[in-house]
Image (cartoon, rainbow, N blue to C red; front, side, top):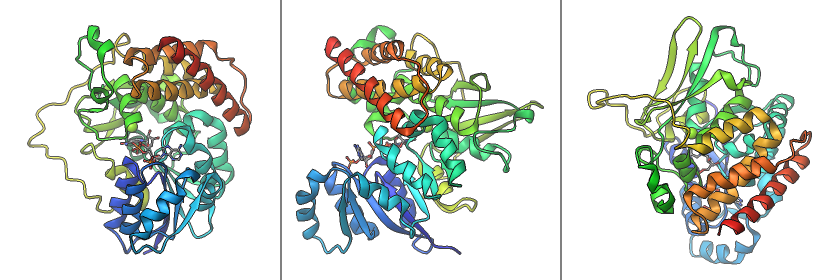
Length: 395
Ligand code: NDP
Ligand code: MG
């Protein structure tokens, strides 16, 4: 049995805490090298006590003094590092073999790339980094021989349903008809559309089947999450937009499917709990206990499927449109959406304004070619300022 040494980026978040939960069940298989956190310092102290990492990284250097005083009260021997460079260092350190990428948003890009460039096993939860950098990210995976394992439940499901020898970014489609990307439709699937204007942040964050961080919860409610996942699937597997179909499945038991040319459809099922894909990523190709209950087929009463309505979910279709336009468009819509969701969570704009900001940002974006990560970051920043201006006008 090999012992895996792991860095968990964004350990204080929903994915991060689930990762530590799975790791803690297998002290014989995993040890934690580093954990990182941003604002939730109490949770970071708790996690450090739970998994005794060698390093704790504070992504925001301003929190150092407060954090140290919190940590002093505990008997903790981890070393504390701060800042962007430290985030990258704990990903590329030679002792590390696996990096969980679970920071939310564009802030996850550079540390995740550092892990890729160091040729690590990269467990990718942070879909935004791939949506932003697309082909450049996948080229780096190939060049540095990183082992990429998708943690997003849909992409993890697709990974499990594909032939074992498939090639990232270059899937052999001769036997494959389609990728069926499932989504629950979020909390507003049946809400009358007249009520959409008055949706509050708490309502948007109350997902019917999954428990997640606030940004991705809002994205799930608007189905921008499925749009980002559409783009993520395109880059991960090297697909054309016509190869991917989004299917609504409110029960969230089927996590995605692959349809083959002979008519077979292979699906991956499980209870909606991220510890299943996390455990699979951590132990691949073995299977380990994740703490998730088995699906109870005697109590599941029905499975339903439908096509997502365009008027109800404009963000989904905007993202698919951006996907067709290419890298500059997907980088821009991702950046605009982060700004818009943040403004919505702060009560500055309405739920329905998110799609307006995204649509206008997309319209105003120059469809230039992005050939380096520096260019991606510049383009991201441009789209952000455009979106911030749109938010100000709407506010
Ligand atoms: P959370 O909001 O719960 O956690 C986000 C993490 O990122 C926290 O550790 C947070 O630190 C940290 N963070 C926030 N801002 C920054 C920053 N500027 N710099 C560095 N770190 C930062 O999100 P989730 O765990 O829900 O999601 C994480 C990622 O995984 C997202 O990209 C999401 O799309 C993806 N994902 C999540 C799923 C889920 O079920 N939750 C499912 C599939 C994908 P702190 O809390 O200390 O401020
Ligand atoms: Mg998902």
